[in-house]
Length: 462
Length: 177
Image (cartoon, rainbow over the protein chains, first blue to last red):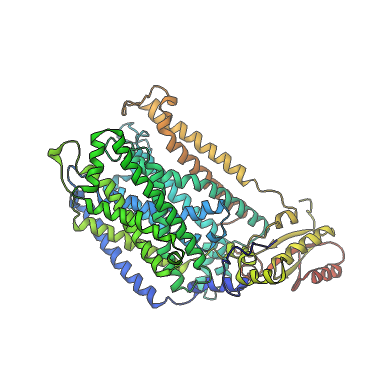
């Protein structure tokens, strides 16, 4: 019953019992924060405050404080929006798609990956809101009958589809995450000694008691939510890509955008999961649960999706040439050799070249190398969005209106602010939430725990 | 489930999921009614062993999803076709069906939105889960590494106690109903 092929490497290292899992995962919540946590939190919080200041300045003065001009009317804001949404995708991919494929290694990483999803979608959502200029009118994107006449929102517009996609994605990811968190909050509640802590986790755990019927429903709900979240996550980045693909701008008007954006999103999201988990496992000593096996698996996903992204770049170039449309051809020539050539080649190096190094088993099982590549990939994916957005519009159909874009300190400040905000949320999460789905992990202990596997190998199955 | 009247419940504590599962099978085969098992994680096959019916939450989710789809169809029809039709990029707006391709994203999103959220609300409602609810498990160890079984007491108490001990129970207690 608990047999698993010896070919598969153990996912839980060491001689663990159910109780050890409980103790290890409750520990970061119950103990005092390590010094490194306080240092990281302080830096993130300062960045966050700087971002808040810049956002308030933007709202108070107007988006003229950004570096936008008449030709380049979308730049860092939308680049950051797409970048953050893309990062979010890996969390849903890990928790939903890998659940449907019954990949057990997801269980050690899905909680943190979903947290990352939610926190990065929050960052993404900020950009369209503040780019509206008059943020207090944000409710105009909702389909509500208004007192200004019966003019409705435009359901033909990809920008409105985005409103629906992002809000569905954010809220569905949150409930998916929370349904899984309830049993783990109950675990912390039941062992809490401090009355304040006990009360907080009692509130959060909704009274969960682990009844047989409830577990049956839990598994059904998880499966159905995974089934719903899988097409949802694909639809979200597809719709984000429609913001560009349905326009008539050379370089944007391409049918390859939806799959290309989704692959890029998974690529950058997995890289961010690597960055975060390599830190989490170190600081909270989770090396037995998030081990080389998990890191190697994620590196393989990065390599595969990086290659898909590479193929997409080359396909774009080919189609531009093959289309015979000179505007389309110029858009791509300009990307590679125009004034933003450095952005294009940074993108190519980071996204197409660097993940190919993962073919080497030695490199993809090396922690330092993985950490460096994970950051390189995210830099590359930021450049990808910048290249797509800015280089496509800075030289439009009318050469007399060609211009360049340079960010102001406000553009940079808001971007830094969202990175700070993201890490503030993630660091708070890492201290107060069970960072690994311990209830799920216990179900695979007997099949994928190192001690149990060894026992099977020595004494035969069961 | 037919057992409306019972006098008392015997609680037995175990420390292994396989032992609990085989104990449930054994007790049920011997005519006992296992009314509840509290466990720290889902045990595969336990619901069947206890004779629990399949949950209907997935069927509910399907219906909720259909509701979302109909709502989105009505919303786009009412706003874009009936109330204030406009020429947007030359898209046909005389009939909802002709304009429908550009409503597909919103129809899809609202289907997922309704299915996921209403299913979760249903899940919380049928499980009696809400913020601040009292913990449902009588023994706090059942969220760590212990498993608590509740068996309805019918007939000889000592025989049941002995049976549970033989099946591997660590602690046995009786609760008067």
